[in-house]
Image 1 (cartoon, rainbow, N blue to C red):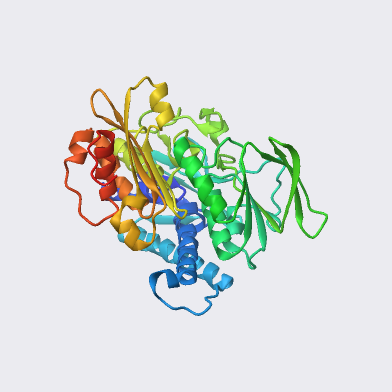
Image 2 (cartoon, rainbow, N blue to C red):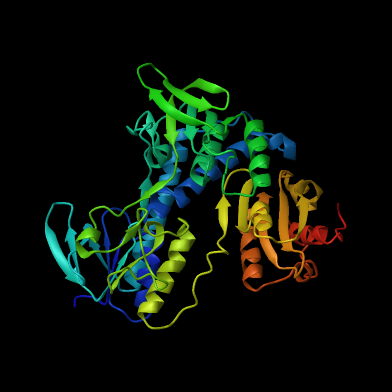
Length: 462
């Protein structure tokens, strides 16, 4: 065998799996056809956060007078904002290159395809083919932007996330179809930079997987920011014959028409499972995703799958955790199974959204009697000092045993605060233990303690 482990794809699942395998003494090869770091580092998480930071700085500059600072007419250079984002992504990708070199991981450039139980055929950019072998092959090929029949992407007027991150010219208006994390974050970026944004969401609420109270709160925030928000709505077709894209939108009121320079389709993702050789080897696929067991092994021994191509949450941190667990199973370490009921989710709008565990609706449907505590940012000294009073912390507890069932947070820095509650849920911390743990003052994080106190009618500051 040429290698102990071959990983196809170098996204947050693939590169983490490769490095962990190397740490465990395995000889590793990674097959990558585009950029080290995959979509997350190059076309997703990282460049998006760079754009959002630029928008936040621009917004601060425009409201500097609120903080007693005089700034004369700040202006945004859209091309430089985009260039900074690309430079950040490129730097992170180079960081993966450094880590691979440090861990003696072989990078084989090209498109990988299974060519037998223990072989991978790699087609280079010039069309030449080669084969490598290993007893363990991990599929980590990720996903791409989903296309709807009513929204065929041409990359110019109807675009996906890649084009949304690299537009040469800022559009004056944009229709964003889909209000999940990708749609919401880029909608906020463009609206803040001065583009007039219309959001079209098929579900009854924006950010549809969040707690309903969070969704309704954020809809008010979106509208306050100047966006038009259409829920229970769908884009049926787009007429591109005129200067503007004319979208025919089915709404609860009937058929309506909305115009914009650009339509951004953010309606989800599709796993990259085509041309991998799955069918030839008889690897089972269920509802478009590769079927795996508790060790991430497919129906064919020695071949594994992780990340967006399997039926688990399509999040970078989930893919990374799966990559580590998969490799540790290969090494015989018997790792603890991932708790998919304790996966944190974050949306980096302004204010931020962060959550883990059950929503209030799901907790009630599961039959729990609840104690719910909610602490508003308007009552937080740190939030007031920061000029960031939008938001709240909402904690959901099982009334009988005090178990923390879910946490739903809106506000500045909540994405940084969420990890503590993930650990608390993992350690089965009760509401009593949470509110009796002294939190530092003044911080936004003390709102977590106050929220727990509110659930038990002991809150001091509301």
